[in-house]
Amino acid sequence: MDKVYVVGLTGPTGAGKSEVSRRLAAAQIPVIDADVLARQVVEPGSECLRRLAEEFSEDILNDDGTLNRRQLARRAFATPEDTALLNSLTHPYIIEKTNRILMRMEQTHELAAVIDAPLLFESGMDRICDMTVAVVAPFESRLRRIIERDGLPETQARARMAAQQPEEYYSSRAAVVLSNSGDLDSLRREADDLAAKIREWANGK
Image (tube, rainbow, N blue to C red; front, side, top):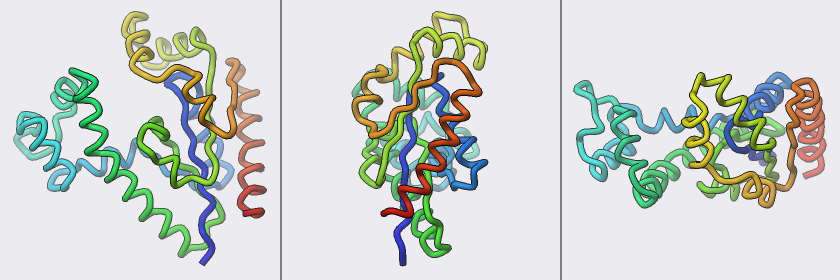
């Protein structure tokens, strides 16, 4: 059975990663969204949610057993140590779920797949990838996009950006870097070129 050629896609908030991801999906390359999996692994009754409640207290659960995301965020992002604990609990479940999806893709003879993961390198998920791609953009461009996209005041947008890794973190680790200057058509062309390259890489594996 041929192994699926796996491409990890990442980048800081506001850089344009989601647009590249959408473009790749439109080009018929399957995309695994790590954010979606992160929500699935904490569904009511899950082992991951049980362990989170053990570590961060039952206060993070609503009366119906669902996760109170606001309460978890209040506790898990209180200190860097708490954030690291949250990630150490959730990431293994997300990676396990990703691997199961990739195994199903092998059975259906998919040539390639993309893992769209904001924390690709931090989670260690890059280790299951054959190639890594980062989408980056200048700080001010990202700031403007986040303010417009999420309707945040500038102070909150800057705080959100400060909580993430700097651009150099992504560009120094990824094998391929897409630089988004702010021209959407240009970014889409880069994404289309990337889709063609992924097929070339997969065929040459």
